Length: 134
Image (tube, rainbow, N blue to C red; front, side):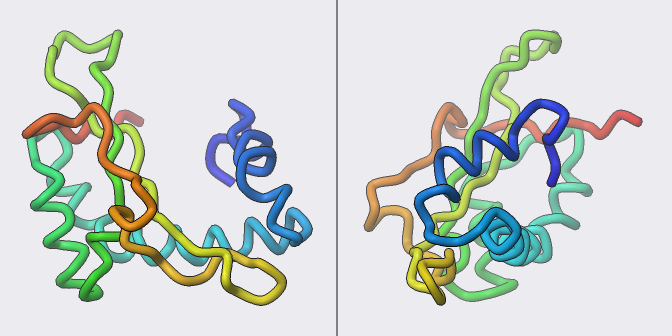
């Protein structure tokens, strides 16, 4: 699970998994499957955009090319980075709206985020994709 060093796994379990009716291994297995779908749709484009600017509309359009309707299930979350000289927001997170309609309450069916009142946050008209540093 990415972010374990920072406790992201514990936060996700407390906020989302613990009430799912699943054990932690099952919950994270379903979550990983969903994350792989989003990565399959956007991963390559995000890599080519590293260090450049884009819009939520462009990323939703790319997601829709991969799987029609996928773009509406995503929200983009941006922040102006403290350690950056840029004053423009950077994409820090992509979230997917998902129903818990799978077996035993597992996350399964992606939802149109507008129907559950979820929206992009802090991205404005344009935002930057951070360059990967190794």
